[in-house]
Image (cartoon, rainbow, N blue to C red; front, side):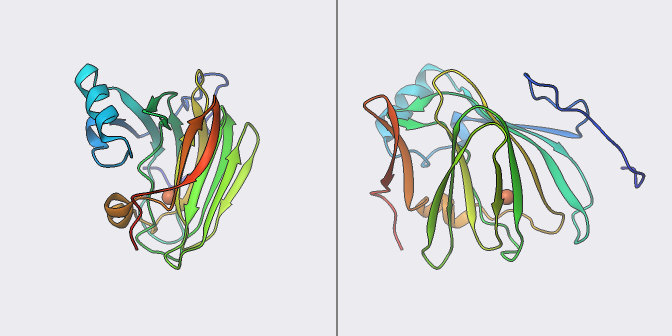
Length: 191
Ligand SMILES: [Fe+2]
């Protein structure tokens, strides 16, 4: 890992960075319990263990002062009427923020605080989203055809806390109703 300045490109379309250190793929089988419609989930998994999203990371030392960054790509698709989405997380160091820049596609960032505030922001190409400290975040692809791609940057010491989101989900879900995305209360959310 170099401590000299460096550059790389994010070609459009395609969005796979010309430089990265780590490529993460999240498949359906790693998302057990995340989707509301468990029957639809089981049926989809029986058919194919599809890749729902991918992350290309530029690795940096995981300490304050460093900035971790990379490209996240959520593929199009649905489980039942719920759009493909990332697991979502709080940062392990809750008081750390993140910036997202939407490169292509259309979707939403679902966010909430431990205190109960909830915000769902649309993402489209060239949207910059600031996620303040304390806000959990999950990206959702609402297109039937194209990837939702974002560039992200967050502090090196932030870490990830998937636990509480994995247990109870977010307060809001994004589903398709009458051919359009709709934000609904999560019937399974527990305080
Ligand atoms: Fe994050």
